[in-house]
Image 1 (cartoon, helix red, strand yellow):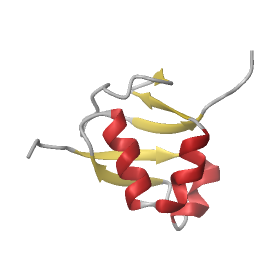
Image 2 (cartoon, helix red, strand yellow; image 1 turned 30 degrees about the horizontal axis):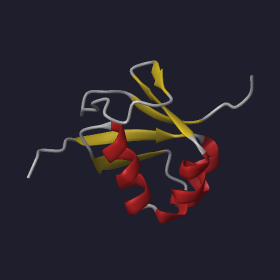
Image 3 (cartoon, one colour; image 1 turned 135 degrees about the vertical axis):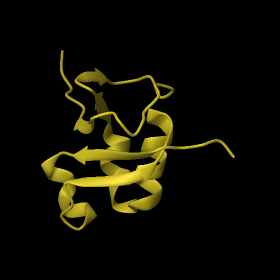
Length: 86
């Protein structure tokens, strides 16, 4: 089995009510894709907002795609609502 670090993910305020008021959650993931899968698996109420579209900020850089981007224990990770528009 591949090692997956324990990462800390900060949630935007609108998601907190779906995870018992938590501002941050911890889960095991080595990439953004694994992190999103783990969020939905561990917190099923997040499925709808995640499927509506999210971005991920890792150490201040925003990723709207790139599910293979690595994440690690030392990264500052924020789950962000994807901003839509043109």
